[in-house]
Length: 416
Image 1 (cartoon, one colour):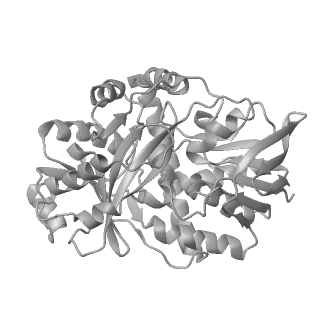
Image 2 (cartoon, one colour):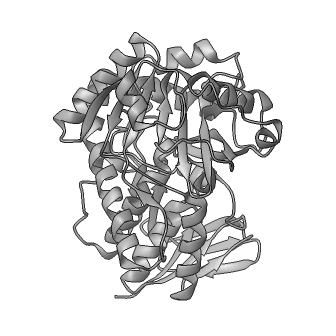
Image 3 (spheres, one colour):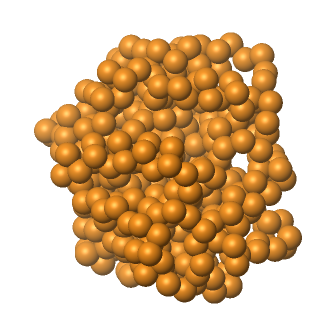
């Protein structure tokens, strides 16, 4: 049965949800407070990452964050501030950062990533969006030190055990795989299972397609309130009026927690800011890579190479910290000695807010308090990678179909 559905949030998760819901014959409206040309869905590394099986909430992460708290250039920066929600989230994060919980999360993260990778490929094969970059060259985890090598090999062994394609490359093999630029590193772990894309190419194509099939895309329209009657939402108030629907999907990224409070739902969620620098001149980089000691990503995209990274917990804001941009540029040059990112390229750096849950797993599922509300948020650094899978799962939840995978680990009312 066709339903009227409102999706709050026009990032990759919201648009993917709209894509699969309209395929099932539903009448879909997407509302976003921006013009959908910027934000986390536009500034990410573009990875499809089955290899990223370790959640952010892992042993030692909080200790590392505290150590870096007063260094605003650090890869994992928590700005000192008095914020009760952040204190609670940090406590839940610490409780989730155990070896047992990480081991339990690993196969879940792998499965949803593989589902999403396959859906990206299916979307491309459908021709709905036309042609777009979707490559399966894999991902290089490039290391300089023995400690980083040993750390990544532990992850690689887990990934290999789970059936993911992994290879170890020494310095010579790395050079042969990436022959057109000098790399100062000892070697790399090559996750052949991974892929990459150009988000700034796909997002406009997705918007164009959705509009062409009747999805109502409402930009520059902010949701101000949600009205509940008899345990379900019947109306949303926006900056331009009021709208009603049968089902509501909350996919507002880092702003989801703010909107949840309007419904008296406490959703532990923090905004983690990520940065990117685009270099549009030829560099000779052909392989996506994570530069391990610099904690940053490098992606050869369509028309440019992207350098992205950092996780900054400083609340929701649009401040570009120059020292963090400089850290990305310097981190890249440590591995590619011939590379010099210019002052002009650094001045064009952008940032996006990524919604981070305490345990590193997204929130996907119905609210336990509001009958017709579905959450689709909290993907942290894997938002782009997991967009299509989340959209597919949302459509299955709406239709009451058997889900493509077990969603119980993602339920928004889970305990931490």
